[in-house]
Length: 216
Image (cartoon, rainbow, N blue to C red):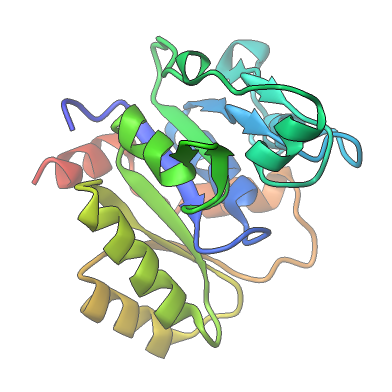
């Protein structure tokens, strides 16, 4: 990793809270948000407007997806349905003045092209990872497997964010066996709104602190 320009937010599974965590990090660090690969637009507006609302971002701190695809499938499958071939040349980090929060689609092994998985894109972008994981049963196995896959590629891991009801035992074991920091936790929220995001963002370590820790 040549420099710490931001983070890549990925998860141990789909629908795990990556978008909420991305909004929290973007709010906490006054960052710019980018989701390069968005699928499922036939059913919803996508994650970009959600993050823009939750993190209360101005237009200049949002970068539009490189690809917006209709089907709620992995990028490769959704692109195939539309006769689209995803060009890796469009999946290059944009030049921004603020920290950059990049949100992936699904987990590490989600196909983007016939010759590219999400973990390949992470490696190409050369950003440290924030790994979002569930707090409950099964998370230790899923999280440790994901951490192992990242480290086999030489990808730096900034830390893990646990999503869901507090489970101190799982948090302790993930830190111990995964040799990783729990950056913060996101509890079950009755309502996900700007206030909730702002309150959690206030507990996130500042960007410069994470930058120092990442370089150690």
